Image (tube, rainbow, N blue to C red; front, side, top):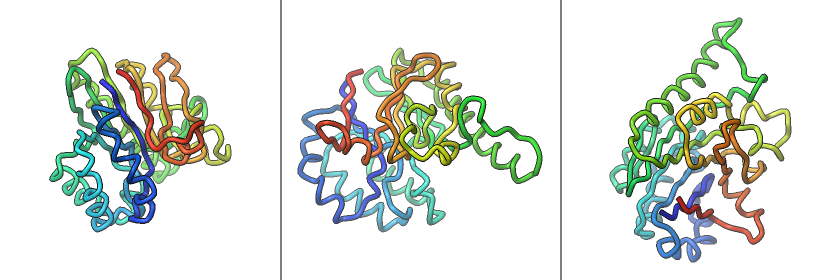
Length: 235
């Protein structure tokens, strides 16, 4: 299976016009398209409707997770409904199997990496914050448990590892992802994991268990040589 992956398109008609022509070739280059969050700028249904009008012309199966921008207007359920109505597989603690490849996805959350992971100690607000990250990791675990295919692909918006956020200011690393996601990925195994969110991060890295992780945020892809709007993986 050839998988194309991108993220952080932050759709506007003007921005999409600039990539419309290369996106039209996607169906000849890949079997499935992954969008790892931040499809919209402000999470408004009208933004999503405009984006979907462009996506359906691609005529390719699409797997997606929502990102933080898609939650901005407090209407993630409506955005999800619109996407599902167009046949997009929206993953949120759920899975999808196609041609022997299982996709498990969740938005994820931040909280830090390695020894810097924030723990549930102290104020109630800190415990609530940490619990949100734990809940996302548990959802990913449930999604992976549902897959009975030999090949697993993990899709998140937030990064599971520090390596692919390097390039961003170190002060904001804890807000770009959480190694709690990587712990789940290593426990179940995967052929690869993709994420977005870290616009100035690094394109690839690995979990401690050796699972390849790719940052497919659109700005990161644009800094590859040559610049890309999606990255192709053979699974």
